[in-house]
Image 1 (cartoon, protein in one colour):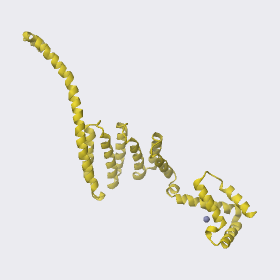
Image 2 (image 1 turned 60 degrees about the horizontal axis):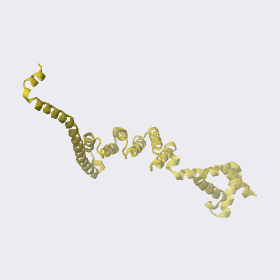
Image 3 (image 1 turned 120 degrees about the vertical axis):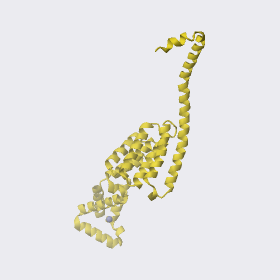
Image 4 (image 1 turned 30 degrees about the horizontal axis):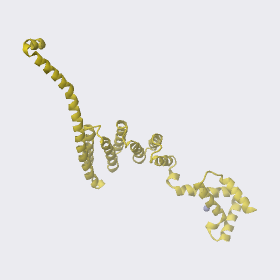
Length: 271
Ligand SMILES: [Zn+2]
């Protein structure tokens, strides 16, 4: 069947009109997709904005409840509401905030329902945010959050350390950078870093070890006992005073040799 020629031949008198009609149709075809598209994106963004408010309200209601009463079903409902925001209009100005909300809710869900899978999903969601929204202001915080989940929730020191290192590499000037450095130090050396008092105490005892090593039992004991008798208190014993002095010097200044310090002190005391 051939429609074209029959159309022209049977409508000869209306040829001009037909040409105009075709032109108009062409123009409409060319314009229509553009205007439809533009309108739709604007509308979609408007819908996303309304949906975001719905999601925020649902989240407020959920978080007004005691943690023990928040169910998986409710978490799901709130997260679905946020997902709808960025599915509807991925390029809306606050779409990244909706992505972030889902990540935070997954993190909360993991903690409250004691569910490791949710923590993994939270990490996936933070990674999605970083990948899909490279200009997002939540990008750095998301990487930090991933590191914290590895450390606090998944008990994966190795991944946590690698992620904190990645964070420092990418955001050396961030206000979180000192926290990341501290976190790495704590992963490397849990006991000393968790307890500065312990680190200080260890240095104090080290001074005694060096004193003892250089003086031997007899001199050390004699100095200690005589110091105590003469000065009247433990804190005033010269061996202790020197240990406290070096202990505080260790906490605030550059490295020094405890052996050298004790040697000089002993020479001064003996002369
Ligand atoms: Zn002491």
